[in-house]
Length: 365
Image (cartoon, rainbow, N blue to C red; front, side, top):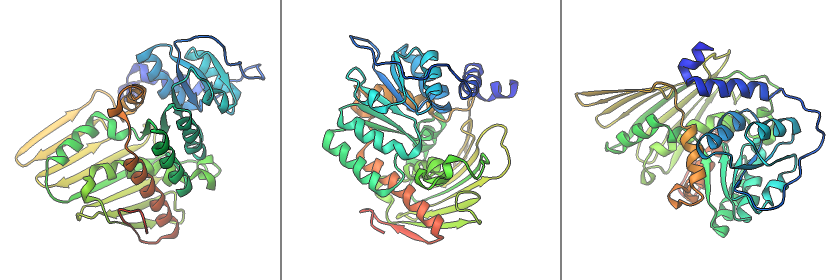
């Protein structure tokens, strides 16, 4: 417990402990709580009430904006009840349409199983609601095409739950890289959780760990490369017997930048995912460790930044999505939604087929 407090702080540690018990609660109720009629100041919906929704989405929304969560949905009624009671939601349900059709809800956080993210997002966008889509936002090309089309057709307000680019040290690193000219060398080493072979992440329709885990570093890496310098991107895969675990993938970008992501999933990592990023660009040498420590060597100047606790950007990502309702600057561009989705999908294809793939600016192979 003390070790976690040093990593995440007291309140975040308590939220994580509560989330553990939340996942195992069982209630005697056997039916959803009906959607209440009449006016209300509550206007947020949550689809998916698992651990992340409980310890991150609902936690930060309630902490910063008060009791604004109106309706929550999960296919497991127990999880919906538990989250609703803890965060004072008006109702809980196992039917997503209850939340999607609620006229009082103008913002939906989608934190359900991966294959459902795009489908729920498209339905919400068509009803004029702002949408936060947790990673991954799509699991196949058809979903990506339909999601982007829905955003264009309905002027959709969408943000993606790739939190690391929103972290304080991630933002500082991006600022320093943008100040340097020329191609970059980017190297990630990530030690992820070992999960059982029967875990739902591995289901074909859910996209596997490439879309479920590796997408974080694929997305952040893409954002570190200037837009005009990205294409064509050559994807070079290396994997062991299983394409989802113990893998390495390299990217050669249009400006000559090279990035490598090495992902190792073996034993238990007590402190959660461990990650180290090394960057060399122009006069900048940078090392980012667990989104808590950043060293910047800029010519003869050495700068150290250390946070009290790890900050992967969850808080800012979730709060910016709330502010997105009335702030257009918070919206994700359709171009970025399409680019990061396509690169994720092609990375998965490259690793599963052990084939070098080139992605061009018009997203052809």
